[in-house]
Length: 200
Image (cartoon, helix red, strand yellow):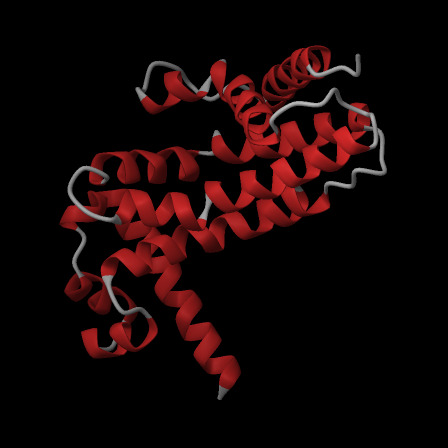
């Protein structure tokens, strides 16, 4: 029974992800979603208490694999010159994926009208980048980076990673570059970050 329940939840998440990308958050209805997955709105609400909660769950589920391979794989006992380029490439490839760009547009568009933006931030980026700041603190304590505010340092790396392509993609001003170009952008961002926070 549990396997069936998990399969049903996943089916709802998959259908909701497609629906949000197609029509946006405001126009997406639980009635339409119920029609797509089969069943009733009551069934949907037994899994997710609101459309906002469902949207956050869709984003969290998609980001889970990326977090596991990037934020959760950071080891302060390893050389950051090896760890951070790998992290940067995984992060940038994920946020530049068509799915991530589409969902980010939805979240930004809805932020002024509902709690979606806040919920998304608190359950996604805030968690991941807080973990990254903890990792940076450990690097600073080990003398691998110069002492600094770890939250600000984390924000600096995020800004560097997103600076070259993210805005262009969000505004539809550029096509997605190939993997080599994304990796080059990530490596350049990490190199600049490591130079800025090199030990004194």
